[in-house]
Length: 312
Image (cartoon, rainbow, N blue to C red; front, side, top):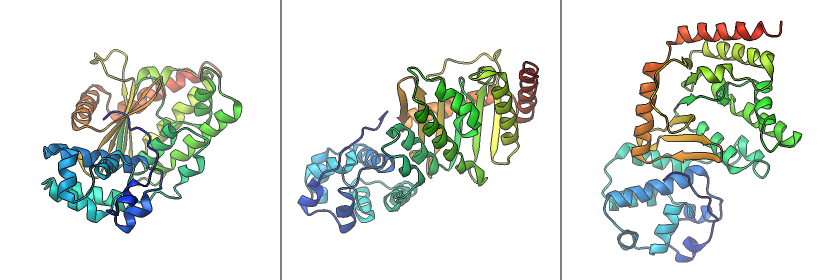
């Protein structure tokens, strides 16, 4: 699965009488990204057992429609139902089952990004949601300084360069949202590794002064114990990459890792094992080609000095 669809809730699960009280309570709730991911993992579990939806429904004593709804994220499930499905599908991966159980029990109701629902697109909210549950984040970027390390002026300049142009209030809203996303790094608990191409360090969106200030903030961030910044130079012989910018978000178990890739038409999410394995391999190759952390910091300082010479 590449990009999770957005589903509308319905009440079929309640009508079957097969759901527990917890499942009933979730029927009318708009599925979150994590709930849709849970459904995708249930589908993957069934397919690995070689079962069709109708066969699994017979094993569970429910209708095929309910199985489809659970796998599409339309209907929430209880931990008991999750373990029943795992047993029926002969899944012996206890760490994965436990991680999925935590997803079932998790509740993002009242999360800070919900304040922006109806004002920003789902793409923005999903990025914040998936970041908030990541155990570690690694990324590669060619075009921009990573969003979680951007200054407010730099972020505002990027959104201000959108085409067609955004209204001023939309630029301010997007900027405020990105600044609030950065809170996950301030505790120092989340490991964050950024591989930044030299092009992103030199790209200017609002003049040399804004860029120099951004590079200074990047240097400061790189000195935090949980943040690693490494530079990929222009003269590095790199393999072609599928995306200019991608982020690898580690889940509680490797099976729940996710890759978010940016493109000109929006965000794409990859969670199939073959896809995540590919991006892990790409990150390993990028890591081997990038400057070490200390040399990267010195290199960023040299570009910052060059930027400062243009406006001093």
